[in-house]
Image (cartoon, rainbow, N blue to C red):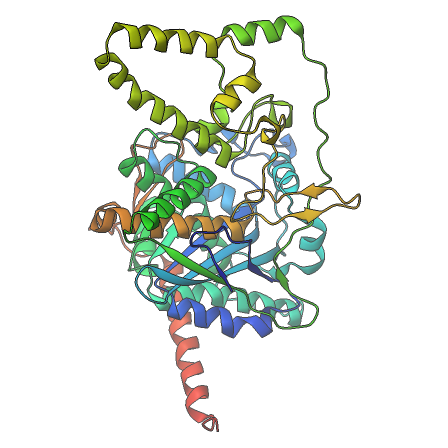
Length: 495
């Protein structure tokens, strides 16, 4: 059990595979039922269809997931979710344990869809580069059939059907719990979750939205959309918001204000641990040892230098990846931005101090602009040795140091479903402390890629109705619940 209050906590999550889902299912259901809210994230084999073989006969013009019209966008998103597959589902349950204190259980469900499906090369490369173990997914992923409602009648494999039924029941438990669901840029997460474990996605966008209102009556919160509304002007990608939220809560705690505290709890079943607190990653990327170009160095020194990558700071990615000469470390970026904000607020005071002070300030800024990068870092009270040339960071609250075969330190990467689900939940809990009831006005508004100001509204329309899938699956959920209640009632009480 870890407390991420003043200190950072190592990553703790329970890895759920085909080998242990039967043993873990009751624990997962229990934490879902006790949670104040549930955060989810998923990884899948495609966000769009591009460069498809002509043999498939796809009309790729209809697969525009960034279409302006929501109906066109839903049609494209539905086509992608029906033809691709979930490979992992992250579940983070925030169970209250006092005022602003939560026990958090993180589950990483490794999945393997049995239907033949498409795989986008860019998506798989992205997963592999971020430490996703494709070999483990192939050998230990929970096998399931996507879309059919209820489960396939033909018993191709008793084990597969048991695994598929249990992972589907995880979603059913979430629906029965009637707790708020929290996502981050979660439109595709909801579509894949529906298609994989609830049933075939409805043909119309209106029915899909109507179904979501019935599945999650306590509402769905999207932290990306909420952050852009409540904290305008700041980066809104997941890792940045998480680390910023951590700092905000630390400041509140130091000032004696209400602050968030979480205790990460892991579930152990066997001596051979099924709980991942460390992840074996890709081999350590070699540092770029290319000698610097004197002309380029001179040009940089003539410009105002920021030791971090501004594009990565704003959007969470950089076209140069590990070849970028500036830092991608989010904590370091936040350190620099706090220094910049402090210096910006000090400028008006310098103007009030008179012309001599202004002249000194200008001279100081000119010196900094012409300084070597290491001198600027020294001025910022930051050790230049800690600033990476490539993307490499010290362990943070979601990172655990591991050793490669050569004994070198590596750190975990983001975009693992369990980590992302936890970060999403932490951001939501932090925003709820800071903004209170303002979050309720932003409920059921899901961020749309490329249309951030025009979210998907999850609200039942008077001109729409629930889909056939919804009626069939909700009936199935009720039947399972009634059957389990009868079994529980017939069991003798525990001594």
